[in-house]
Image (cartoon, rainbow, N blue to C red; front, side, top):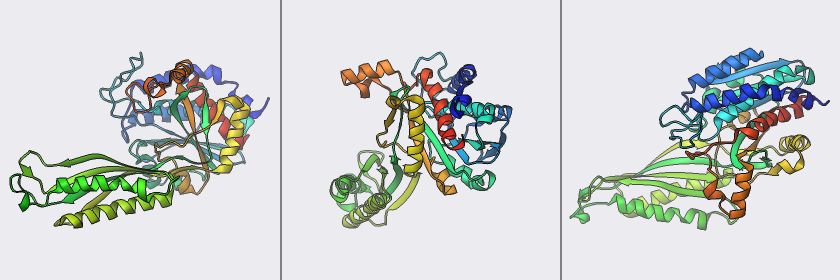
Length: 407
């Protein structure tokens, strides 16, 4: 029996409590950086499994299992929920008004706890150090940085490699990964442009910030179509434009909320520079009495999988699950803050996608051409990964990935 088989031999006997933990977490979701109950559940489980447990970054939890000489592997799960009202109708649906695990972080936590238990029980099959890290605040891009600011790098052993996964609306039982960029970098901006207020009947007495902001919105569309090299990826979205309070008053300012997604650091820098250049130019052309304000927030780093680590883990997945279950992931335009952790340690990592959709429902939707309509995506009030086999596969992926280095 291989080391992986030996460690996973006890999975079937553990699935009952893993499922119960998942449903309890789903029923009691907590918003970003407020994951107090979730952290207590995680701490209690890890301590019971024999891990050295440390609270880092407020609600972040790290469990360390030292098991002789060998590499150190870090596996991360995010814990926070979203301000979404659940509409799944599940028997274990959220009991918290207006808050829901609409992104699958509850499944991530339960799966990593299950893997942590199996790794502890199967210590005779591997050697090294296993770190189970439970991160708060992923949805707002602040949790990994909070743990780093609280001394994560100094408080835990330096890993040789780091792993994370995310449940997605692809068939349960499927695992997908790819070398290189797998999740985009993201930047949100609040831009305030200034005009000169006046009566709506006297536009000649104003510098109208509504017209100015509208010009900016139109001009920003040229960044992707005319300034970004064909084949390079960038998204520039103006999600909000706010100005004024009534019809007969020209306001003195307008605010725009922008979101930018890129897969390349140079493209990112070029796009952000173009945004500032265009805004400054339009303000100058309009005779704005004051320079605009740029406020950057909710910034997420690029998630770029290390090629060698990804190949090692992918080969281990294929050997365990079968080649047909392991797919090449499409680059996702969603964003994550996991990569800040391995980047802070200066170590390679890989991030894979885990199927959460019912396979038969997904297959039928593909045949009808209605996947986008019929398969709820992350952040939807209808998002609900199928427990079986998604949860079991989520446990196995963590164990298989870890043992590809530790066994």
